[in-house]
Image 1 (cartoon, rainbow, N blue to C red):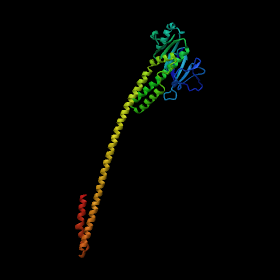
Image 2: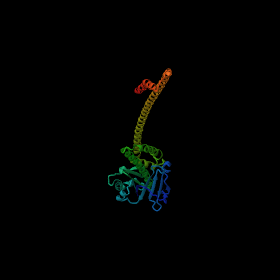
Image 3: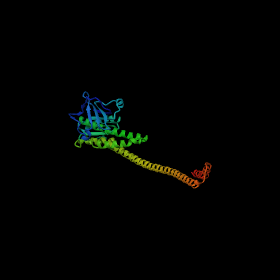
Length: 329
């Protein structure tokens, strides 16, 4: 039995819940299972449509095709197979494994290079090997193989999400589009808190729990997640420091502009005050002169005067003072 995992799903609403054997999928922990949707085509139950991390930004759709014969290489390339798996029925007898060695190696590596010593026992009579983007499971339980394919599908989903985030990080850094990075970091933190589980299989499912650990380690999911999170944390820290420096610089520049504005305002006020003082001084002098002239005219009121006398007095007394004031300004 063979299984191939590809990207994409099916929008058909006439799908039935995925059943393996006589039961539904129940070996994932609830926080994960509650936000996953697994279905199969009613007319073709060997085609599965899987949605992981539903109702989140990272929701991902996968399709699994379970086949009796291996998919031709050109078809696998055309369908962009993300992962693949094969089951060999050893009838629960480890002694039967040797006869599947060549087929197993050809399926996983396309050569005879993969040896039987790579097989890892998962429980009595059951063995598993992970290699490149595939795995081989040797047992007498076909339904358990299908459950393992779901575990492999989860690993693919995690890997796809983490790789996409790495690509977004690299793209943003290369283009210096830093504004998108804090949001990406925040999304990864939320994803890790709500949807990423290092142990997503229920502990009481002994073999599947062990199988998941083998798949997870082979795909280096924990390491990639940790590396990505550390990279984003480092970049976010640098961006925060840079923004704080920019903010401090902006505050200093704003304070300097305020001081300059206040200084300019003070200078304008001083100039205006000086002009006002000159006006007051000119007015006071003019009043003083007028008073003096009135006094003079009062003193000489007993003397007969003519307009010529008035004109001469104005020219001799008032005009020089006014000209003096104009020159001082």
